[in-house]
Length: 67
Image (cartoon, rainbow, N blue to C red):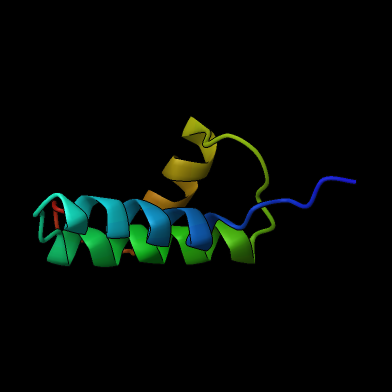
């Protein structure tokens, strides 16, 4: 049986790749890590979906527009 890849691991690999290209992604990187943790916590598997992204984006009651 194929083991599911955790979203947080995918985010970390993506950020490492972007950092190797010279991108800092400080605030954006932290938000991506938060999203990866959320996706893993709710048990999401498979491709990213609009529904998952919207559920995460709506979590904070008073979010900064950058969020």
